[in-house]
Length: 314
Length: 166
Image (cartoon, rainbow over the protein chains, first blue to last red):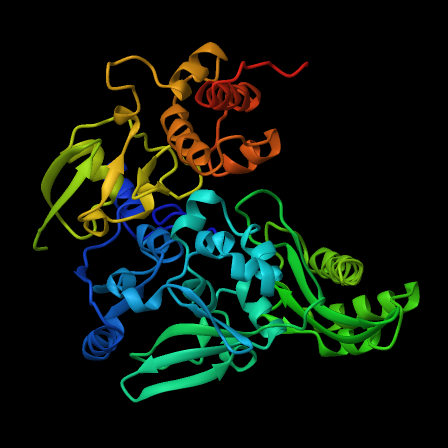
């Protein structure tokens, strides 16, 4: 999400200059930490509770490890979740798809069940990072980190997914729509980890699309929109719209969705939906563009996603 | 910081070492194992020069700790030649199609292409381009890298390689 200047560059004048070796160490080598590899969720929760704020869970590591190299994260303890077999895998449970937190984006792409029942996850996973990152990056890390640039959170809100959180006080379910409180702030309590995601399978024949504008492979979205809808004849019967990276949290664009329900996605309805979506966007101005531009293309992503979703209903 | 003992299989040989938990896998491979074919380009997970094959996955070894690779089976560029020392199909492809200029990205490109062809033995040009989208080359413009992988795919599949018309 952010590309901070490496430590040692914008350093205050009263701090001594770093030697080349110091700078390399401070920008490429993580600080020291103790490594823990629990074999069960209970052990992981106990470690995270006992070690407190100095400990971080480690999933795929493709957000945390770069932050550690930059010393923007300096955990004293890493609790690696790779040793917990029960956290990986995709299974159908009634009308829900239950995805273990340590399931990688590559696993999602390889899953026939995902491709068949919730194909928008497949489509979005392919737009995340690059092949190597997808072998390591996990769905749990993507949704639990609270990074507004991550793609899966808005999708999970659009799909009405719930997260299972397990902590020292037991397990609880939190709706994706209730989970995100601010950039990197979520409903996770100290000692809790997200263990699985439950995604209600949309009706057969539904239309879907995830439209993501990005500058290059591996970039976060300049703006992105997820749409899941059903049609009754040539009219939109149900519609949900989610937005990525246009606010400090992922957003559900309810007014935009209401603007197209009952319509045949004529030009006026599409324009109204884009305007309603833009009205709730508050992106930061960054290297991806100024605020007005990011909102403008956000509206275009909504329009394109609506049109493509309607076209691929069966 | 206390060091941890790790063992893993690298290019078919059992290796071991003592590492700090913060030691990145790429540093373990290059410095402890003295296998410097795996390159460090950006160290920020962008360029793919450090790509190695771990338990059937292409991984950027600058974004994984050596302790996490404990017990795993790793292949690096040093393990890519045929058993008799001749070039593998991919290596031959890069040579024949001029798939490299400065050569810095080549180990990562070959390791990534290796896994790509294992998963998809007959990729389209588009699939090759998306398949190597996590590897950056600043010399070739990718054209000859794509041809090199197509050459290798044809050779592995036992069919004649025909270069697409320019």
